[in-house]
Image (cartoon, rainbow over all chains, first blue to last red):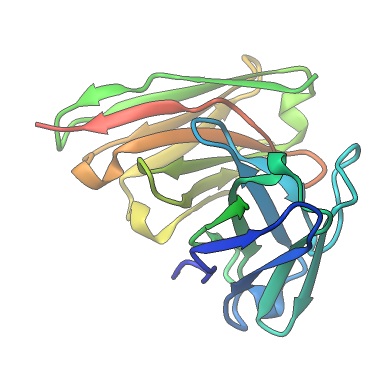
Length: 110
Length: 117
């Protein structure tokens, strides 16, 4: 399975909103309700931020939200903060029962 | 508090084998499916394998091609990844992750595998 496509980098100023896209096919994102997003700081393990397209784990900031349209999923970070500077990865369950991650996006807070 | 601790990584020559372990605590390990995910240095995440709560169902990424085997011992709260015929491109951090409320909801700190001659 090929990796899902994400932009290499996205940047924004503090307080702004940014959106990261994740493009797949009808065999993964387009046909799945199990789309997740992860945040990863350098040298650290990934952390689940969004699951099932738009659900947040308990205790997670509501500044993070997810959506999906067709074969593309999106992660929106509102009210951008310095601590949001990290790498972000999407993931989708696939039609053949496997999983595929995105290529990753580096978020920079200007 | 869910906790996962990976071990077993190290330096190994191409073609050799390695077994990784993931010790779980803070939740009922035997009730949940588990994943292995890897990450080459400076690269993205790659899903490796998933095993059902009782070990009866196993799924692997396409690149595994029969070289890796995921198992679990629920009596020891431990997940394993047996890696055979290792290649240079298998180098990276290997993470175990849970599937409690959602896929990959808790992660270990990772163990580093370096395949080099």
